[in-house]
Image 1 (cartoon, rainbow, N blue to C red):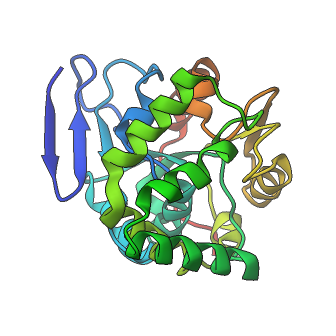
Image 2: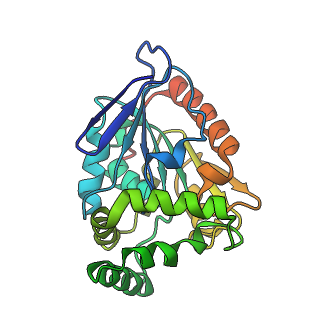
Image 3: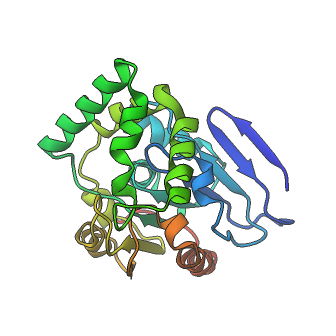
Length: 256
């Protein structure tokens, strides 16, 4: 297993490849590539992890598109999926398959703008640890994670750090309604939702699945926001089915 890192993008080789579709994988806010460590990506596919380090959804989408040349399977959670929606809007022919989870395709709500400003002010005041603790409960279905799970989240969030988190908060505020782009998608699409996700409930994912022609929606009982940790076997299964479908159909141009 080898890896390369550049411009916030890390590639990890999974087995020997003969140019199968690569994966471009994007985490959520306060998350990094360790979010996916329990997921079994299909063997033989190069996996590129894109970090969220810029304060604009358009810039993050460009990072996604720059991760590889040619078509790829895009996998995103939360803010990472939102960056993926913008990548789909900009270059639909590049996206051979799409897997999104724990996310929201709608525009920001007024209370979200206020919450992001408040978190940014805490970080600016040197209270990044308070932001980590504030966000921690909503990552888990019962809001009372085990000490091990809480510790894993804290370690990941602190590895992301204050500077990148402020950029992520700024990027959140540049989101727009992704529904128009989703309605033009013509790639195999998997949508995963935790039935007990406090941040992005199943209704958000039903809207996404309804917008994308032929999308497959999977609701995961007893799961919260961090699906790659809480239900890695379901994410693994979805990715294996998706890459098989993407290999059969290939990327398609957007609908006119």
